[in-house]
Image (cartoon, rainbow, N blue to C red):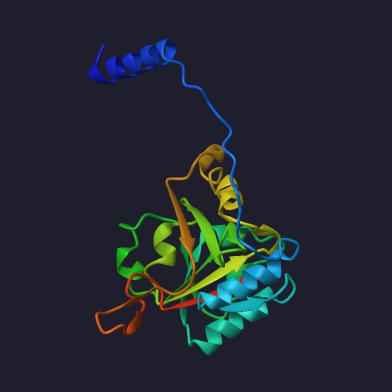
Length: 216
């Protein structure tokens, strides 16, 4: 028996001898906001977080994405695989940019990856009372896709907006492979920003300078 098996055997024996009592924790949402109008609440707080918000729909989504590409003079676009989940839409073929599908490892596309100016990916959930969106990262939604570009375009279904962080975690913790906890959960409020000692705000230090969110 090797060391790994010894450790696992010891853990299993310990669990048999020391039962762990499970509880159902109760979460309390004490913030005051309109819980009957989560879309409006989300939009209000997301704008306060300095994201560029576009209210779209399934019919106009491609048109609205292309307007962002044109307005920001984006010629090359890194596409996370999860945007292909949008039904009835050949989204990559319809975009007015040179689209590059992020479908391999960083090592295989390092030269291209760190020179691409913009990316597009699909968020899994929006949190109304904080004005943020959440991503459970995996091969279809790589973490780097939302970090290494100057401009990041996020697609979010209006129906995926939930009231608070507790509700968001219920969704994201099942977003990994086989409905398991993903290796990484990322919450993004807006463009990356920090302030120096003179309190001058600088954008894009730790991530994108521009965040565009399309609600559809």
